[in-house]
Length: 421
Image 1 (cartoon, one colour):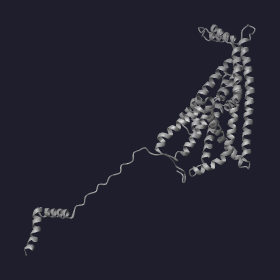
Image 2 (cartoon, rainbow, N blue to C red):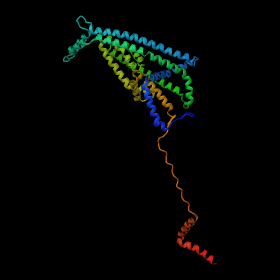
Image 3 (spheres, rainbow, N blue to C red):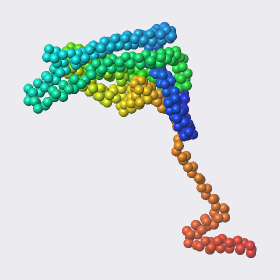
Image 4 (tube, rainbow, N blue to C red):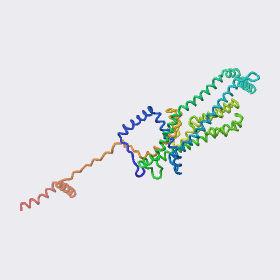
């Protein structure tokens, strides 16, 4: 407990009545004004994450308002560039891939067969030449290929992408609101930190509360960067092996670029792994459709290992949380607020852990144990003087062998003789 720190004592009646009512009130607010609470939580996390940059610019004599503007404009420019590049490249790739798939299933060659039908025939020929002629797949394979409605599937894919773009436009208002709220928080953060430090001074040798929250978020960022490095490296190595072994022609040539892309998209929680798999999958479809199957299996395996092993271990170590708590936080965030809930879950857990560590030794709960029973003193009655003389006479008589009555009689005879004289 730091010297001069304020200790918060929670009486028993608050533990019994106040805390359950507080939890009930929090649950009610989360259900009724959950969107507003979520937006303010996101804004607070952004403000804590950007405050070290703003403070660093302030150390070189830049006013705080201008420093905030510089930081936000820099991030806005980078985000705008990434969104435009992703939308342009993604739309072009989807359309070219859709045309490629459509030609694969519809364009006929000189033998009046489509590319898919020719591949089915080649697969049956390979089975026949490898003593597997009993496996008859040509008839069912051709029926399956001819039943595929490629044009409808590709049009649905393009419609889905366009719908996602419209949804992104719809949440633009929420993004603007979060930015505005976080700017107000950044402007007041330097003034509000001083009263908090006076009320709750940190331990000796420990940073203030605000700095500890910033360090917790910095740990989250470091863990996310390490996670991106691991996943990007794994995807690059896997694609390179596919290229070397011939499962993905040219995969070894573009493995580095694909790995960098996968590592970059991994910074986006939940959606990042799927976005990272799009360019390798599209390239595999263009080169050969069978290669796309191997690429799909590769990324499915990477995502399973990532979600169940890598993320809990890496983020748990970075945030100093148990891996089970990391998994629970991500699942709870997805249940409460979908994709955005997953995005906020881990940084919010990091902040809550820092708050708990700061206030753990400052909050005390009044004990419910019964008070120790006070011992009752028993007074011993002091004997009266006559009784004390009698007891001493009895003790002396027992030593000389004279009874107590004889001792009293002998003691009374001299008195009678004196009276007669």
